[in-house]
Image 1 (tube, rainbow, N blue to C red):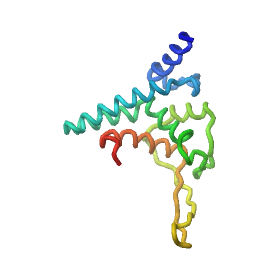
Image 2 (cartoon, rainbow, N blue to C red):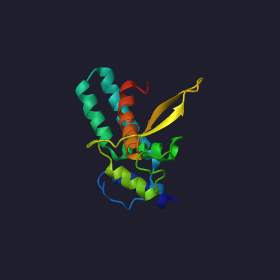
Image 3 (tube, helix red, strand yellow):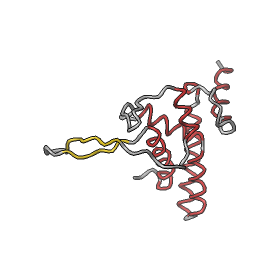
Image 4 (cartoon, rainbow, N blue to C red):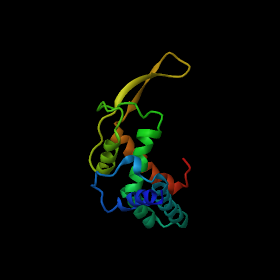
Length: 159
């Protein structure tokens, strides 16, 4: 049992050096370690924000957005933890396989344009009127979750 757990930790540690390695199994990721690495970065961002060091905050936010562990957490939140995980965007993709999730993590970057949102009319509460709701693609939702990790760290988790 001890030999197996150290192998799983190794996967979570070495991924920063092997970004394009698709042999990583989604189920074998050490989520506790990934969350710990992300939380430490978030804590550093918050401390820099408290000091008023804007340059350090921006640099650390950029580091967090580029970190593999934060990308994994963002993809997990959007594709597994989120209530709307099976909602398709304009691309029609609803659910992702574990290999597709790893591929999404490796593709994520804040460059380029976002795809248009799928517009759905939903009822307004208390009336018979309807309002439009835009549903982004899974890729765009994962990017939003990643940026949210960086921004919430600056504010100390307050929205």
